[in-house]
Image (cartoon, rainbow, N blue to C red):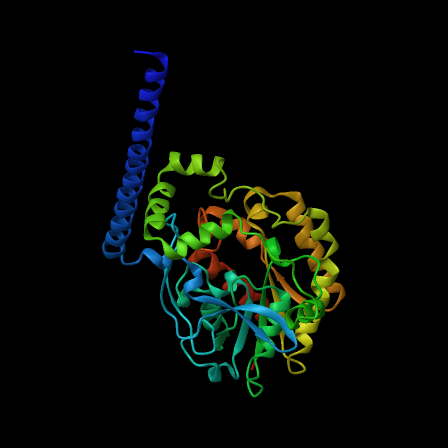
Amino acid sequence: MSRSRRKHSRTSFDGETRPRRLVAFVAVLLVAAVTLAGLEMGLRVAMPGWNEYFSGRFMTQISYPGYPNTSLGRPGFDGYFSQNNGDFRSHIHINEFGLRNDESVAAADGRVWVLGDSFSFGWGVERDETYTALLARFLDRPTYNIASPGSGVCAWQTLTARMPKDARPLAVVVGLTVENRVGPMDCAAEARLAAGAVQEEPRALGVTALKMYMTEHLALYNFFTVVLKRIDLAAVVLEKLGVINDARLVDFHNTTPETLMSGLSSTATELVRLRAMLPPDTPFVVAVIPTRFEVRDDLGFHRDLRLGVEAEMAKQGIDYVDMIDVFKAAGHDATSFPHDGHWTPRGHAIAARAIADWMIGHGKTPG
């Protein structure tokens, strides 16, 4: 056979093979897609709580005229929230006003209000295990929870402003989480931003956004996440790859220690403005929630951050409860979930007892 004929034969063979390979590749993709879709549907039936791991089911974002935007509960939500590493599964009920209370917002009148973020909301525990609920028992005064996960001091001004004008608190307790609620802040600037006076730069989608999307929409992703996170070796590998966060590592939440320390005065100033929104002479106390890194590891920076914000609050006339001693005495592992970092029921009980004892001892018992 001549060289030209051999070349022609090889070309003909390749020309016939390429379409076959393409068809085979498409067939494999179709089989994989059908298999994954079948697994997804099967898991949704076999694992009816597959979407309990997505906090967006019970949380949303709202705007309120003249104030910064804030996170808030989804009105009427009644269901469960689970941590995929097995730390907790808790029932969440949100009332018609977007708050974690069984009673309507009208019941807030004449009660002790508790403001704060996820710690005060009761992330991971039942409502009657929160320090808000336990505080009512220790003070012998009814309480009302107006805390919201992900919120900070400026958002607490918003949450206070939107409360009914005829609702007056007996007292206000503010849970200030040192780990991520202390730092530079300007609530008036945040309010202008919320009103559109300043436009935020568009945010690029990243790994966190992708994980949140899959947590919300894919039972298959949640299944494998649950399984892998509960296998110690797999969890270590995922931490090394950066897929999941190691709760033992210090996280400065996209800022620096120097920046955090520079914001101590503004934190206290905005707390003063929050207090000024309340009826005159309303007992007002800040419960200082120490960082897990100070409770567990006694890290000096976190101690300085706590002491610094307390000094600024004292300078500006804000009463506060320092809870570091009671939490160090109990120990981090006994008061916090192992992977999540929020308080267990015992942590909430310790906090409620410390706050109540301080209020009673300093004559701040309302009513």
